[in-house]
Length: 124
Length: 112
Image (cartoon, rainbow over all chains, first blue to last red; front, top):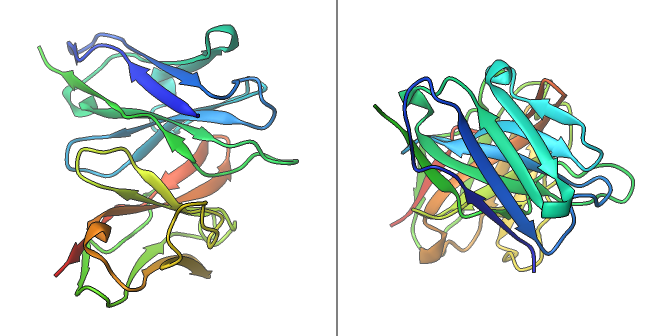
């Protein structure tokens, strides 16, 4: 059974750095051509893709947030970590991690499993 | 990269069909057959409904179907049911490591 679960602080102050952890089970982060993305959703607003890490450790970031984001993984712990620096109240959102499944010869470009999400509020 | 454009809301009576459009550009929707659709009920995580434009994951009812023409993808729900009332988001692979995915603006489906 594939599951993903996000964890991290509920409240952060402006200018602080946010660190979120996605703990996965039911699959390995080393499976070829598989990946995990972080996606966020401000209250009442649309989904926004943030970052992705592939099984081979290649990373990709949203252009608009690239300077603030770092994604990494610890395969032995089955965890994907996202850090976002210089947090601002506009970053208040539910943050999701989601899996892109393993492709036969190339990556698959959709999210088949999502975590439950974690609401992060940025306020002083 | 701008979000894909979806209608803010669509509605229909039980048993009717509704179609949600998702308009992008030749750099995303029009450039690849990698459009996916997600259903999101209030307070819940998104759920994959359609991938690769028109493929349905196991367990998704066949009244959900997807298609694409040019830079616009569409999700059709046939035989609308009460449980289909939710927000729906399209998503496209954008082909660049500086912008891998782009989501749509979201559509609220109301069952009258």
